[in-house]
Amino acid sequence: MKNLVNMKTFGGIVSFLLLPVLLFAQSITFDVNAPNIVEVGEQFQLSYTASARPSQFTPPTISDFEVLAGPSTSFSSSFQNINGKVTQTQTYSYTYVLEATKEGKFTIPPAEAVFNKETVTSKPITIEVVKSSNNNTNQNINRRVSNNQQPSSRNLPDDAIYAIVEVDKNTAYVGEPITAIIKIYTSVNIVDFDNPKFPSFNGFWSQELETSSNVNFQRVNVNGKLYNMGIIRKYILYPQKVDELTIDPFELGVIYQAPSNAPRSIFDEFFGGSATFRKQVSSKPVKIKVKKLPPNAPESFYGAVGKYSIKANIDKNKLKTNEALTLSLKVVGNGNVKLISTPNISYPSSFEAFDPKIKENIGKHDNNGNDSKTFDYVLIPRTPGKYRIDPVEFTYFDLRDKQYKTLKSDAFNIEVSADTTSDQHVVTGSYNKEDIKFIGKDIRYIKSKPGFLKPIGRFIVSSGVYQLIYIIFIILFALFFVIYHKHIQRISDVKFVKMKKANKVARKRLQTAKLLLGQNNAAAFYDEISKTLWGYASDKLNIPVANLNSDNIRESLLKYDSQQEDTEEFLRIIDECEFARFAPGADHSQMNSLYQDTYSLLTKLENILGRVR
Image 1 (spheres, rainbow, N blue to C red):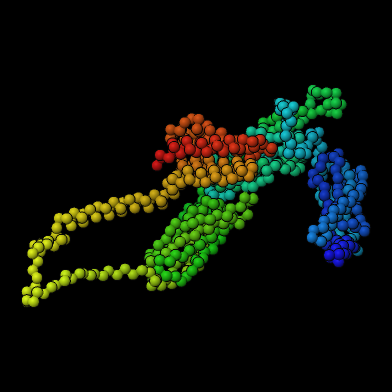
Image 2 (cartoon, rainbow, N blue to C red):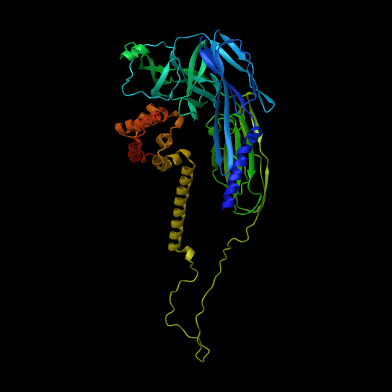
């Protein structure tokens, strides 16, 4: 044991002595950091940071800015020993304090540092200097209003705080993706947001892209004026009809800090006190002109707009009768992947086919061309033989070339053999002989009671009973055929199936929301509650989710004798979820009651809408 301890100690000492060598063996980083935009007269820091101590530091030539101080040096280090493996993180910094003296874009050349006789050069950095303004800039968004600071009105220039809905194009084809970003610009210190009202995107199918839960601001230059710009939300929009569509304004309450005209104490008066105010901002509506796709689209066009590729494969090419095979068609591309309808597959007449299972892989960050949609078709051959499945054709509208392009997959040859192991139903007949007893004479025993006798030449087929039974069987078969035909029609009606399954799907989502409630995952909980109600209303009322809004929800629910209070409760829960998901630091203590309210509301609505056919 003692020898073991000594070995561990010796190993630790060796590791510590070899640490400088190991650090030099690692890759050295030498970075530069400074703001990309500053104002004339603004002081800022220019920092050079290295991951190891340089033996020599050669500063850049700084001629376009006034050097107020520097370079000042600083050093920080941290050690970690995990299972005998020692790691060290070091940071060496050289910092200048500069002042911008004139407008323009200026480039500071690279600095150089020598590490273990190896010279490393930083990147040059470009800094834009804009005209000076007297407004305070925002430094922190993640703060709340204190209880003793109540928002009040205060006059501000219209351009001090404003919001826009920025789109990457104002003219598009039906189904062409449009990126929409809701941004806020400010030249004052923002404390909090409240009462957001997002556009309804009527006429578009919209998909929200993933963004940070907190609004992170960065400096930008807008017409020579310095602002802090933050992204509220991002969307991908797909126009659904030919028209001039309008994106409604985005509205938001902004709570900000500004110098107070009436100091509350002598300290506020001396140090320059500030107060909290509120301003309602609203973006301007955005017009999008939607063009019609060119005519004469091929039959294999299923609404795909963008740039696509396809890949088809089968899981087997040799099988027996009544054995299933799967044909998979995967569509990958950049465009409205989610809105592509189910392609038609040409297969032999002796094959039985079922509705395909659809899988989607849609990115939440951007429309980068990696979105995909997979259609899995299950086919069952009923007779043996050699068959060919023709190539699958898929047509999309290419936005770059402005024309339809058709893709073809490979053809598939299928060999089907008879299944000799299946049950063979053979009908056999048998009869029983009556024992015949001889009594010593050449006369057989004569029955005294011959039993049932029937006239010669009369058959059961011509009897009335047989004909009645035959007619009954025909009527039952006709009824079965009608009922089965209606059943097939209903299960092939997507709207009907969604309507019938709406309550089941909503209950399943509520179970997920309950699990998130138990995990105290507020953001995911509110998102799931919102999807539960929107999805239920869309499926039950046969209204696409993209077209749902407060007005048509109210109109549709009241149309089916829903109570006014149920409709208002539906909209209240939706608004509360939207606010809780968006507002930083929102109160999440009412999550349990919101879950109970949603459960009760779905029960009431199902009692009313469950009768809808």
